[in-house]
Image (cartoon, rainbow, N blue to C red; front, side, top):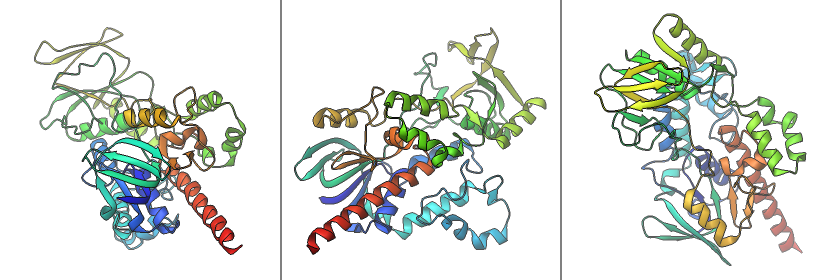
Length: 399
């Protein structure tokens, strides 16, 4: 199979990029494919958000996967008159079922499932004709351009102290997670961010005895970084900074890791005050697995006995893509910063035939690169590049 564009990754970024390439970049459906191992596109997004029990997104209604900014609001038009709660303040944040239904409508409108290759990209090599991609199915795909839209959702962060071979211990974002308690249990939950907060609330709603363990206080931030990073307020200084180590430091400082929005924090505080949630600002020291219940000892000496231990400790901070990206870097001598992440140009081009989005683009797009707004900004750059190249080509032909 020979293509003009191959997108590696079928999550939020991959789906939005495909939508924009088809809808605005004049790319033919016959010339584009999305490689992702899931049975359907957005599979990991749907799995992870279902696990958390998320009710409304953290991001505003203009951050979605369609082209026009007001598409989600327009999609909800008739439904909005039928029931309340589709959007909540502040920033008109959409309900998760509405957002997911809108995503499904975008996928169907552009027939993206017909373009989905259900496989994992295992190796890439660059030649004079473009890029060759070896798939887990044994097939080879050739593409003039590829977009690496890889996230970190397949690499959950597993703390050193957590047993890895005990069936009572699970990371909630591990692929194929099947550790949700079916009967009423005493559950210890480790994490201090929005996912941990939402999961704690879901466990409480399902009548479990919940022990939430966080290394820090419940930090409150509406978004995972200041909205000023979406525009020139902060990005002007970021772009002017040419030292990539300093850019990495700016990204780290800007991210509100381990934070919860005000509505989640209020719900947690109410539950703590009513005794419905046991909360510990502490760290896990050891986990004893020899008895019927897990013996979880905290650094303060407090002992928690639980039938299940769930980890909501986020994802690895390593560069995503694993061996695929390691081999690609080695084969084409692709430039990387000290932190290991790609050095790309303003078009998010890592190589004349390779573009990046999501975490791989953050040294160019800044701290919002990983989220939905980052997907939209990456697509803006990609579409602008395609249009610019088309204009140059038309000009050359006219001469």
